[in-house]
Each structure stands twice: as structure tokens, then as C-alpha cells.
Image (cartoon, rainbow, N blue to C red):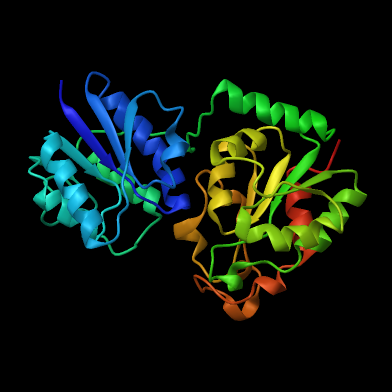
Length: 323
């Protein structure tokens, strides 16, 4: 039995997009001992993953780097999959003492990698497919894998029942974005919610603590405020009951893609071709595709020009507003 380590530290969207890769690695190494190295913030996301033993260590600071290196040297792994593949994790691999090191860059310290250099030329998930293909792993799903346990399923079901939400009769809205990126926030969520409510659709506002003030204000105009109500795995479970979700380019956009529902991601200042949620390219609403002055651009400061009517028409085209 070989000892296999997978490194995936963050951020949230990248973690979620890596879950089909983790599942594929687990199938490939069904008879081996698997360990996942991640950060404390994301360790709970893998509580329902029986294939992996999860180790969470902080990644910044010299002391924490030395702690990681001691862990790697003592564990004597036979193979490392570096799904983070930044300078820090490349150094960890180089000093790990592990013979087989799989990563994104066609240079040391990786012994297996795609033939071409990485320059951001495609969606990162497609690149990670190529990374795993370098060691013969090709059976990779196109949707995130975020299982939850029975307790989490019961919690979500009880919450839906308590709030009178019927299956597929409500829409999830995430109006926030990552800290320090206010330009990624679509300014018309309130108007969209009012139109959904007028059409008889329930509205649920999603977010974490940084989104609370915004969601408090939006929920005063209607809808249920579910800020901090669910863990990430529970959020994916909640999504399975919704008709669809409308989000900014954010971590919850990726989490909700695991639910198998349409997730309409609103994109402006980031390149949707490289950042859209898995399986959701057809649902992307990128302002550069509608604003003539940004025609042909990969990104643009034009989110405000995306109208409620445009978003409404995209939902209606999939029959999501029909009982």
C-alpha cells in the first residue's frame, strides 16, 4: 500500500473546483492510503469524505512552513499531487523527500506534469485535468462533489419546512463578493428579488458574516435572510431544492454548482472563461458579452449595465419561472 498526499489549500472556489479531481484520485488509488493537506478553514468541507484522512495546517509564516516540511518529511509519502502548485507548495514538494511529485508546471520539482508551460491559457479545471492525465487519471467528473452527512441533510430539510419553502419554488441569491472586490458586485439584486417575489417565487439571501449588513438591507425588501445559516456542504444541499441561483463571481457560486441546478454567475471585472463554475458556462452572464464598448474583451467594469430584464430573460429561457 502506497501513501499518497494531495495538497489543496484554497481559496474557496478553487477548493470546490478541485473536488472532482480529489474524487478521481481516490478512485485511482482505491487500495492506497490517502491524505489531504489543506488549511483549517476548509478542513470541515471534507468531513463526509471517507477516502481521505484530512490534515489542516496554516500555510503562511516561516514557523508554519517549517511545521509543514516536518510533516512531509516524517510521513514519507510515495507520491504527492500538488493541486495548489504555487511557489510555496513547489518548495514543499522539493524538500519533501517524496519521489513522485505531480504538479502544474513543467519544471522542477515536479516529476509528472503537462508538457506545456502554464500561462493561464485556459480554465484552471481543464489545466488540472491535464495535470492528472500526466499520470494516467482521466476519469474525472465535470461537476463538484460536496457530500454531506445525514445530520446536515436533516438540518436543511427542517429549515426549508420551517420557512414554508417548497421544492424548486425558490431562488437562491448571493449578492456579495470576495473582500476588497466591490467591483464584482452586481448592483441590481434588490430589484431582481422584488420581481421574483411578485412572480410568486421565494427568495433566499445567502452569505457569510461579511455579507450580513448587505443581506440585512436586501432582506428588508423581501426574502429570507440565510446569512451564516449553513456550512458549505449544507449550502450545496440547500441548492438541490432550489429552482436556480443567481450570484456574483464568488465562492458560493462554485459551491452551488455542486447542487446540479442552474447557477447564473454575473461577471464583469474577471474573465469568466477562466473562472466560471464547473458545468455552468452556459449560464454565465458576462457584461462584456452584452456591452458593445467591451466587445471582445475578457473582462470589463460594466456589471451595472447588466439589467434585471436581461437576467430575468435568461432565467425565463430555461423555464425556471414557470410553475
